[in-house]
Structures are given as C-alpha cells and as structure tokens.
Length: 455
Image 1 (cartoon, rainbow, N blue to C red):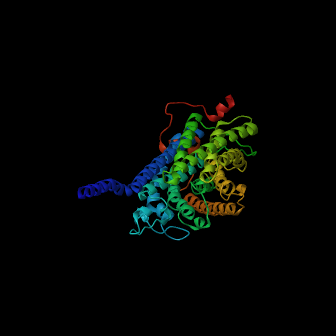
Image 2 (image 1 turned 180 degrees about the vertical axis):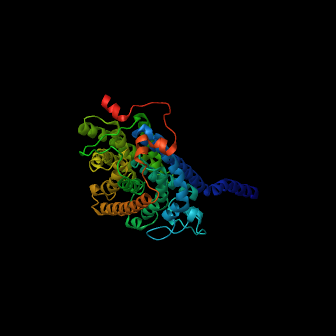
Image 3 (image 1 turned 135 degrees about the vertical axis):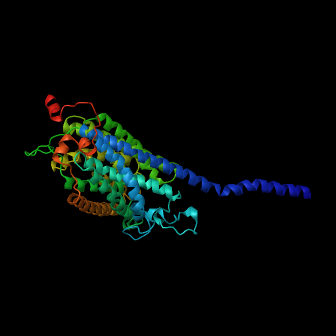
C-alpha cells in the first residue's frame, strides 16, 4: 500500500511539474510573438521609404530625380539619430501634459507590466504593450521618419539639400515629438480622450502642416503659375515608378496600421488590415471617378493619390470603425484629394506630388472620422458630438503648433543658410547643381516645353 502511495505521489509530481514549468511560459511566448510582430510591422513601415522615394521621383522631372532619391534616403538616417537623441524622450518620456522630460537616449528603465514593480520606469505612456523598449523605439522611429518624408515631396524641385536635412532634424527631434506626446505620450490630448490609433494626425497631418509651412516660405517652382492666372502643368517623368511606389506604400500600410496594436492580437490586426485595404480601394475608385468627371480623363496621378488618401484617412479610425465605415471613409477621401489638388493650385500653393492633399487634408479628415464613424460613440452611431469635438480640438491644437513652429524654423533657415536653389540651378536641375550626377546619364530628353508642343 505504501508503495502505491509513493508511486502515486511520484506520478503526481511528474505530471504536475510540466504544468508548473509552463505556467510562466505563456507570458514569455506572448512577449516573443508580440516582439516579432512589432519588428516585422516596423520593417514594413521602414520599406515605405522606398515607396515614397519612387512615388515622388516619378511625379517630378527627370532632372531632379537624384535629388529626390537622395532626400528620401538620407531623411531616415537623420530621423534615426534625431529621434534617438531627443525625439523619443520628448514624445514618450514621463514629464508633463505638454512634453516628456525623461528617458534621454533610451536611458532609464521601461516599466512595462511584465517587468514587475521593482523597476522604476520613465516611459509610462508605453506600459500598455509588453514588448522590449528597443522594439517600442524601433516601431516609433519608423513612424517619425515617415512624417519627415512627407515634407520631401511638397518642397521638391527647388529646395536646397542642406536645408531639407536641417529642417528634418528639427521636425523629428522636436516638432513631431511634442505633438506626439500630446496624443500618444500621456499628454493633454490623451487626457481628453483624443483617439488617433495609427497617426492620421500625429504622423500624416503633422508632416502635412510642416510641408505647408515650407511651401509657403519656399514659393512655387519657376514657371508653374503664369501672370495671367493660369496654371502650367509640370508633368512627372516616370509614372511606372510612381505606380510601383504607391503599391509599396499600400503594402507598407499593412504594417503601419495593424502594427500599431504592438501585440499579435489576431482579431484586432485582421480587422485593422481589412479596414485599411477597403478604405484604400474605395479611395482609389472614387478619385478615379471624380477625376474622370471633373478633368475629362481618369488621371493616373489622381488614382494613385486617391489610394493614398484612403490609407491616410483610415489610419486614425482603423481600429474603431466597421468595414462599411472604412469604405465610406475611403470614398470621401478619394473625392477630397482630387478637389484639394485643384484648390491648392488655385491658391498658388505649389505641391509637385500632392502631399498636402493626401497627408494634410485627409489626415485631418481621418482624425475627424473617428468622431463620425466610431461604432462606439461616433456621431453616426448615436453617440452625439462629444467625441467629434474632442477630435476637432486635437486636429486644431496639433495643427496650429506644428504650422507655427515650422513656419518659424523655415523662416530662420531662409534668413541664415537659405532654403532655395538659384534660378539657374532650378532650370538646369538639382541633380547637377546639388549632387553633380544625373539619374539618367547618357539619355537625352527634349525639354518639357518642346514635348508639350509636339503633343
């Protein structure tokens, strides 16, 4: 009998031991899976740099291709150092409702729930995700780089390379993080209940407001607006490149939006990915239709920007709207982008690639769409105007700060190192003047004016 009892106890220990050993395993496994997901999503967002480079280059003239490629390449290097040195701490470090004041250069512990109470962390606003601090930093870095890249297209074909680098450092190091702290870093907007899930305002309209300030200070390209008030089209040189770039951006958005869960939550990332895609598709079709009706032809550049408009607009509400809501948001975004392009030309705001129409206009719309289409508390779902008003305050507050500070920075750069190349360099092309190299060496192209006459 004693032998049976002993055997029974041994069997119980053997059987129980794996369960005790595995009791802590789910947390470790979840952290590992979440971390892999966050890093892969971040890599998709990083690859969006290639999409922006190709889109902007294709929509501009061949003589400026090297310059645009160089800007889109170096901007992420600048962003990496600026965000590490200043930006991340200002954005996510513990501080006050206006700005973070701790965690410089990733110093200080990350007090995520998995690390226990023994750690005194300084990034409280990121406690909701249990991935390592380094993974959090990498994912937020690629978002910061995206905001800076948006500026590149709007100021293309006439800005000094060094001035763009200088502004990008200030944007990613100071301006972007302050707005980000308000919404994502535990700042005053977060306290109000402002929601911007993946960055329609924090990333896209921040880049758009900064770009608008730059375009105003910089002025239009030579020959864009005639003395009689007419607008002279300046055509892009490679629509194949622009199309491929847009497809890369569409792909990258499946890291941008679903990755913002910062956790491998099957239900959440599936819904967000689907909402993201449906808004892009709807924006593509509505922009094509409106361009066809308003301009007489289904302009490819409008089709591409309509797709991006849908993606920008769904970025804020992607986690809180239904699939039907995402389609409506995309349809509206596609209409907005076409008329925004025409509006900016009418008021002589020269944006070579439509960045303001895509990122600024639809960043604002997408943020407000949270207050309209959120299934929990949205105006169209019986929630009243409270959520919409909160979203409006966020749009206005971040927009005013970014535009005013950017205007000051651009003006200071103009008064010191200058921001615009000489008329001779602009006419010849920035590739030769700024970089001493051509994108298509050995190929001879007729001037655009001559090609227009032939057509």
